[in-house]
Image (cartoon, rainbow, N blue to C red):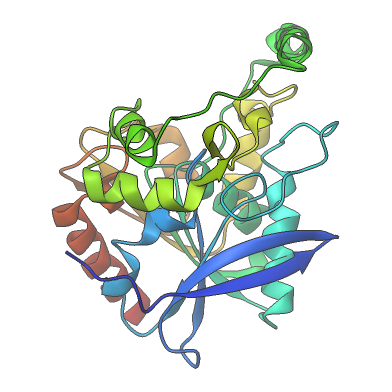
Length: 284
């Protein structure tokens, strides 16, 4: 099993909020920011990070996840708000240009950063994701109504507790996108806290609410067209199908498909293959 005890913890103060990070590699190596998927945390890179060469991987806990702060209770979680957070971390690190690795939602955030600020992103490494979910313009009003109604229903709802750590691990292993025992333990260890009454997820329960607003496909495509960064896109054969049109809009993209599921970067064999691809990509 890959050892992860050499990892370090970092903390950033961005726009008055704490953003936590876990990092691996030589402090003098070129930094790469890593962005996890929805309801995951920085530990999602535990299996991949130790196999990367010549970089210092800094995996963020995105706002509302892991050890990072939650957004204000009255503020919905919009995916584009993460763009300012990522740029804030890059600024604190003194990086005029940065390379990004993203999985799933993290890949979508990385693309938004690279599209909005193409001069800031040198390389883009996307795993099982390209760009955000969208809503057809004709459905925007209904999307808002559904989201606000659910937000009202969720007010005051008591958070579910697990009786023990192992129960949470089992739940994570059997989630919509299953992971093995080691991966589940990593994610749960960083994502769980013990309080009176049992073990609770640290992640903000508001992350479970549907988005009040989403971009349209045309708006998402405007980001993809502006990406200048050379891009490596890694997809799992049993992962989430991605749009061929979206891929075609990335001007300088190399696409690789590997055996594995949506969390293939947490699968032992696939993680090694992904590391090899990324190590070769970063040498170019």
